[in-house]
Amino acid sequence: MKIRNTLMGELMAEFLGTLVLLAFGDGVVASFVTGRGDVLMITFAWGLAVVMGVYVAGGLSGAHLNPAVTIALASRGDLAWGKVGPYILAQLVGAFCGAGLVLIDMGPQIDAKANSIVGSGAGQFANFTDARNSLDGIFFTHPAASMGVLGGLVDQIIGTALLLFLIRAITDTRNSSPIGNMAPFIIGLAIVVIGQSFGAAAGYAINPARDFGPRLLASIGGWGANPFTDDNGYFWVPIVAPIIGGIIGIFAYDFGIKQFLIAKGDQPLPAEESKGETVRQR
Image 1 (tube, rainbow, N blue to C red):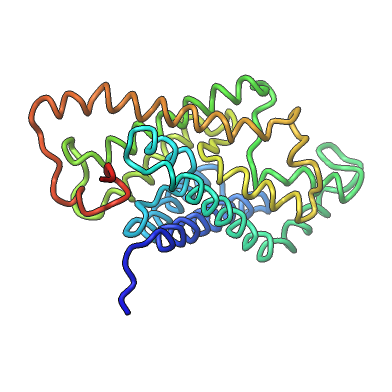
Image 2 (cartoon, rainbow, N blue to C red):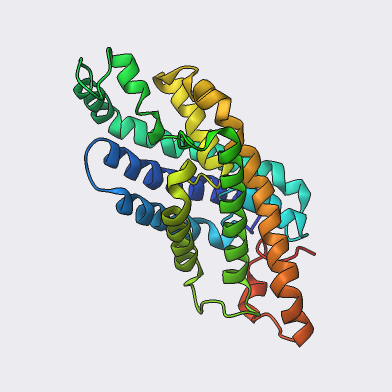
């Protein structure tokens, strides 16, 4: 029996695509924290992680891999609202499992790093628990000390608005969209430039699943309540702010650019109509 592109297939694609995204994304942060690479490596690896996740899931679900993308598309009628909840659940579970792979693989190195910073010197911690807790940024984001909760909220709204604006531009075949199957790679470059431009402020989560799934994993995996109490209870910001920003970004593109392309009479290329979840569902 031939299996068609059903909701189950779309959810499996979102789950596996987001798992791949977080396995590589959190993996590179773990490598950096435990002593390899630099910040430039992190931004490029996160960008490539997005590319790989999109290539995994794109043919079935359109590869949202991000609740902010899912909700933004639904807000424009490009995804049925009935699919929003299942998509988000699949993304959260994928993010949790992707981070879990990192913890399984890198856990001994994370513990070794924590042991190496226990002591009485500058920048060291009094005990192993405090030292390990200081490494929780491997799995979820923190705002810079100068940002605070409000600053992080604004940062995440801006970063995710830019992300959705760029995704909309890159995938709009009425515009100067990349040819062939290059769109995932260009979207990955958008992640790189957002990370390099805004990452220092609050870790550029720009994806509720990317932050909350690993945050929950960290809480279960030895960090206790800290993931939800750190930074004055900041955990809700990378959930709420990206959703707001995503809606702003997609509306900004559709009303600032897309409506004028339509008014010109430009038509989408046939390839756009082949991706059921990336265009308006009928």
